[in-house]
Image (cartoon, rainbow, N blue to C red):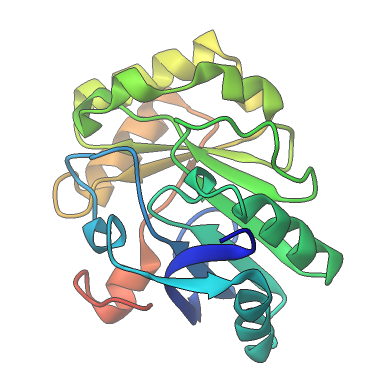
Length: 215
């Protein structure tokens, strides 16, 4: 239907990642993803969901009376109506974050939206799906995230930072794969190389546990 989205879940929680970590946030998780990352922790979003009218999604978000909203997935940009959703939320005065895999064109995203875009490392199994042209559509408010499973991923991320001059244009996030790469190890690598990146963890998993949904 023309004015609908397939929604996996809408919930109010603490933002667990990005430069906005720690802030209360409303999450709108859309159904479907075109990638199958080896470490994915939201496989339930691939197919589970229900159709909702755009207006009903907005009403539900507004019920939480929270200034920060994140659009996530899955891969939210697979659904065309996500673009008017983000624009309408911005028009309503919300600070809107978009969590996207980096495999879908971001050029149509409302310029007021903060794009938090992955570049998939080799350990994800989806490095070949990176759409590098997206980088030119990022600006200083946006963020690029590398989810790092091992030293090979780390070295690849460093290489991409240099090749694409990422730290000249936006915030770079290094995130260890939960349960695979220790925080201490990643921190030591970053410090040894004097990398100008923001290391992050998934705070919602520390708070509620890695298997808890809707947080």
